[in-house]
Image (tube, rainbow, N blue to C red):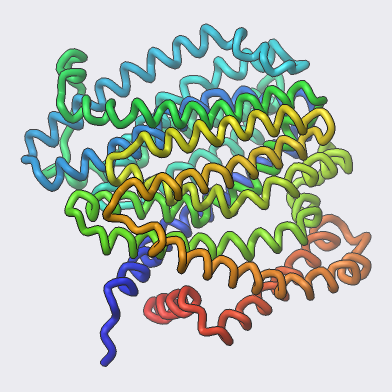
Length: 530
């Protein structure tokens, strides 16, 4: 009987562990899309829609800064070290101190953010200024709940428990949609009803994870402690040392969003919302695989880095990058071919008219080419965090920030939302190149051993995807003509799904004929689950 190589075992394990979380993330992203469809139905691309988009974006920026964007990547490697090298009492003290500091700091941020909301909102040039301020203040406490959820997620992921963190965003989206439909008749406008849903959903996302932690109370215990003790704890200090550079890098990334949104807000009504709708489509695709793979990858890379198992570390990272290419590149080609059908199918309503479709498609056409680079960044950044190196991703983020701001400022006046979308995609590619270059700093990691097979595999997938999309482009006009005039679901839905089947069949045939390794591994995994 043939014995699998360690590299094959590592790749198969990554696919296996990522598949459960990917399924939950798929549900979450589909529900997130349903949330955007709900927003489109109630608000369209109106000034009120822009107000909700900006108001939700601001606490979300801080969420990425203080929650999963920074705390997770600094906390997991440190907590892994405690699990490997410390006793239960030290683990309890570390968790208690970090929880205390996190809660105190985030609460202060929420209070300051609510007070300063009028100053923040002025930068966006929105028509609904007063309503945007109100919505921002209403949703700012969401940051407290989502930060606690990220803390709980870090604990569970370190124990290689991933499902609960996949449930949290599912509940957030379900509750937000339910509140939009259930509370809108009782609130001044539907945006306020959705804002209430965001608050309730954030609290539920934190609460759902706590019972899973309590199941491990023999090993994992924590409670609040004194603030001075929390600050003086060595583990807290180590997390803060890692978080410091990470916050700078994440701040640069979030400043990208702020600058882009401010430019969009001043570019005309509906541009902010169209960019948000386009990004939601991109995030739906991205979250299904890149976020899940990055989440599963970080604890493993951290463990291999602590044990200085660099060969396994490189194999794990290469497998993750190949899986990213395997999914992102075909999806990019298909999305470019079927973008308008997808947008009309998902969003078009009385409030989301042809002009809304035009604005969103213009942004989506230039957002989607950045998918591959954004996805790669989601697995390359954890490769540094696993080594307790948060400075390199910070530097890459700052370089990317500069590229994005320059390009967006230059292009927005002529190309509006499309120019801003292109700037984000191009700066994401710059970020990828910078991360790969900085990976060479570790002498134990040979960039050539990682990059050469990944680049060859990527070029093969570009070729295969280009071939597979040809019959889709040929069939699309005929399908549109056949099903035109039968309502949105039939007119756009049937051609889209037929095209998807044709593209998938063509791609699978090419992969099967070429005996593609990633394809065969996934087939093997499916057979074992039967």
